[in-house]
Image (cartoon, rainbow, N blue to C red; front, side, top):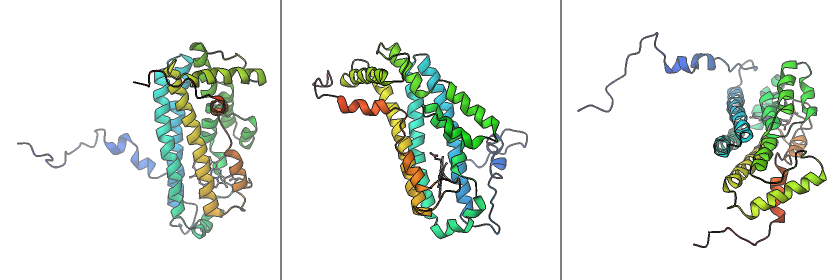
Length: 282
Ligand code: HEM
């Protein structure tokens, strides 16, 4: 009888290994502290940000694919991408709280060494926002000396977004979404379409599930902002300016009202209780 574990397999040095495949050696060299002598908590501070950036990379990869799927009117792959993104975001909302194990006086020991670096400069976070439909030319200003970043963001600004691609799917499913989605008249038309969808979820169930996945994405992004601002207030307080030069907590609080799908949120206010789910009275 074979034993469950018969001792280690001996690998040749020229074979592909876990460490080589994942570039673990290189990865573990990327945490370079600014504090000298090294402050105990700075390693956590670097690792948590790097972990976020890795996940942002994955989210951007999934968002691009999700947008392509929606533009091709393929609802199932788009929905599957979104469910993955949402699971990652769920993790990211919780991950920020690890930083609360750092005492405010500990952070103060090395905070000035990071100045003027700030999460404000996270190019990938902006890409996530822009890809969602929250593009804003003003936010590109801080990258004045990084033409490659401006170019990357401009591409997102000009290209399709989760929001524009969603409207495209809605059109394909015969909802009356105007070509030009800006302006008051268009807003009313889109709200009518969304009311129709939400009043009769069973009529076009795939679109209903897709819409719910999109509002969940929006919700997690807001939750991340809310959790981040609470952690910031807990660690540096509500009156301290950010290393990026903003008002700190006050600025971050102002971002928590951002919505990539404002009409998906708004449509709910106009639903009536009749008719209900068809086929649910079994
Ligand atoms: C103790 C921990 C943290 C503190 C005190 C902190 C503080 C701040 C402050 C004050 C800002 C406003 C911009 C500024 O003036 O600097 C900001 C923005 C930002 N931070 Fe953090 N942060 C922390 C952790 C994190 C982590 C772990 C991430 C993960 C990526 C992150 C990502 C961001 C992003 C993306 C922004 C820009 C938000 C926006 O403009 O909407 N922060 N942070």
